[in-house]
Image 1 (cartoon, one colour):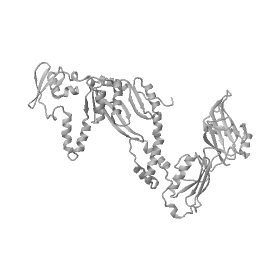
Image 2 (cartoon, rainbow, N blue to C red; image 1 turned 90 degrees about the horizontal axis):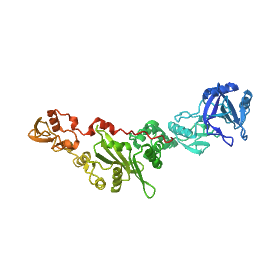
Image 3 (spheres, helix red, strand yellow; image 1 turned 180 degrees about the vertical axis):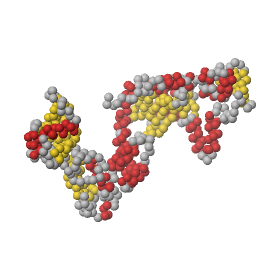
Image 4 (cartoon, rainbow, N blue to C red; image 1 turned 90 degrees about the vertical axis):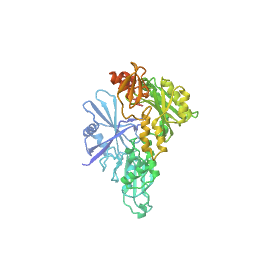
Length: 537
């Protein structure tokens, strides 16, 4: 007794034209002369239907007849199985045993000549790494079949050309006109399934036709192979890396252009097209504004309705800045994706020395107008704090914009950017200069001190003099100042202040700024930043 494979189209519905639509597919294996009860049992077991509380109603439709016919006993099943009925759709519906209401789950079984049919293969092929190809195979869809054939041609070291390709058929011939190799497949009973109808896997072509550039190494095939390596955004995966991997995995040489196209296509698949992302930006900003009330979020478009700037300062950042020292570090980084521009950020340090983001922005370039707009938005969000300063590189547009928007706020140059300038001018001697430069940068008056003479000469109750190898440093605890400058700038006791505090048995934490205290650091992150809601919510 032969085994039959039955395909079940399910989770669909009958439309007004009596066609079963919006369905999914599963399969079961049954004996050729199975009873109706065994058929029902096989379906219920495969699809997890509890027959103690549900009953199954099976229907099928003849071509040209709109009214579905029901199978409810062995006779009905034998008519379907042995009647050579052409173009049948068979629906299985699940009902509550206590009511007449149809549940949401439907199943359809479809065949070429009859609703239940016999196949040589066990399963529908859904993976593209299928190595063996033969007539009679059933593939999940045409895209899967195409990729399987591309892989097959590469592994067998030959090339094919497409003879016919449309929604219902896919035919291939060898690239050589005199070769008898051919492949034909077509859709299965108007489904997405594709069945291999004919496959003559015998090459009679001359050897020269097999040594040309391998055309079947398409960008789609290569893209599917490299996709796992593109999911890590931190990894730099170049076209040269792709060429090496294709050569190693497939044994095929591909051009730089093909590798680049494959990467671009996969990046669009994984992350979407850049233009589509910009279309979603207004909705994304609206969601952020609704999710984080009190934030300052702005976007500017050009007169041609094109994107220009976007600025974001979340409410949590704004409130957190109140508990940090008023030092703002700004910097820009050039965007190198499909659409260029400059990413701008502003940040500060909390009391524990961790970076707290204050604002991030995208502008067209680092020009006077764009930087002025950024600082205007920053001032709206954060205002003008006492003793505030702004630190950046020596970009002229930043310096001009700060003087316009914050005329009373000093601007300081970042020591790291200054060092890069020194490094570029004195590359040969940068090793010697490095120690000197950073020693000077990290002290407040002179190079690093070798040692301290812990001898304190009090001038008044709050004014003290510290002697260090003949040098005298005056410390004023009342005004929290030291002539070295570090005490008043960092708002932390310098080495000379520590000498005074230790000699007077004073508590050091009383002379530290509140910005460095643990409760202030906790308050910096008092306002939570919750995840954005799902786009489907």
